[in-house]
Amino acid sequence: MSYRLMRVLVLFDLPVGTPADRRAYAQFRKSLIKNGFLMLQESVYCKLALNATVAGAIMQSVREIKPAKGLVQMLAITEKQFSRMEIVTGEVHSELIDTDERLVIL
Figure (cartoon, rainbow, N blue to C red):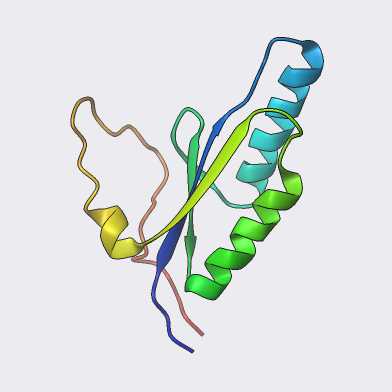
């Protein structure tokens, strides 16, 4: 089995006009966090995957929890591509350690 670390990015734009829409938005967001996704920006979340097969399974799990309304997009990229992300303006503020330094492969 090949271990090529990947990231699954989930980008979404969900309606929040009605109480039911807000509830669906909150449930989707909480489900992402519960499943190990980290917030990069508002409505942009990512999760580390060991390889393309695991990334595909993660994407399938997101398809299963998607809300009925709104736009949800996913993108799987390699860790090398993700590390080349350029911050154009602003600063990264995170209290979470989001690296693979502590990754243990058994």
